Image (cartoon, rainbow over all chains, first blue to last red; front, side, top):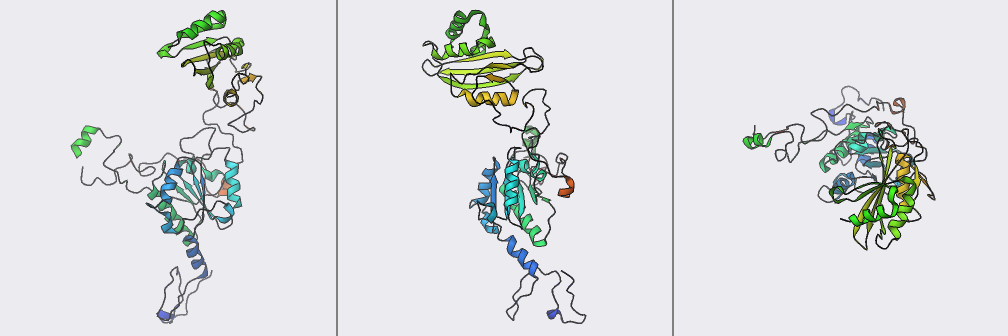
Length: 203
Length: 195
């Protein structure tokens, strides 16, 4: 869309929105936004997901979907077991070379607009399966929007990935993004590489 | 545990039993490959043996030895509660002529395990009703569990996207730096005043 600048001298209340992604009710009872912004806003809160679950990351996926972490808070709770009804493909787990044609067909059956989230290290890069069995990351065969590293990732990291995807949808950004780790809640309980005597001294 | 089984095998087959041992209580007989099926039939049918349960069958590659491969068979007798491991050595230096009799006519469960051993090592089981790959796809060439198969070689079933199609580099990234990857064990985020 082109620039929508108002003529100079227009009162502030009557100026056209430039980067508006908000919908505000005014005193007059109406709001102003751009159509594509509103469309993206509605898309990002109604992601119908297709879970392509192949491996142990599926346990964390169940945790994300269950009440404690509750992906329903972000409008992505409805799994569709037909790719034709889904617009977010969760690739959860290791993709072997034998599964690669099935995954690509599932992706091609989805309707546009569609997004892909790589759940866990194996889906993102193949992980430690650096051999004849495994596709070294689903981006070798289909496009991927968000990578969530972790083996498996914590549910919080998955929710971070979902929020990152929602942010990308709102901005219309299709460049891939990687979820950065947050602080580990168990830090200080287990610390690898630190001799236990030193750790005791630190306490 | 069941030294009597090894003794019975030696008494019955004599020179076809190349060596035996009972390391750690696991009775093992290394047998001549051409007696493989006859020994299997004896172990299953003899009332003192009665190995009804076919536990496992696999291959092992010893690339610096001739014959190169081991075929390893594990059996268990529910009747007598004893076990035995039977090995046969087959194949030349290049892995050619690695063939042995199939045991599918004795134990139905040998079917898929012999297919797996064929898939991974290229050992041919003569008399197998349906000897094709079971884990890898038919387009796959080579036998991945042989020691001379390159560890990082891949044979993709479908063509990968090119970097032009993807619009971004698709090579493997460098290993995670200290501020990336899994959040534990790598970096001290916040010491909470403990240092």
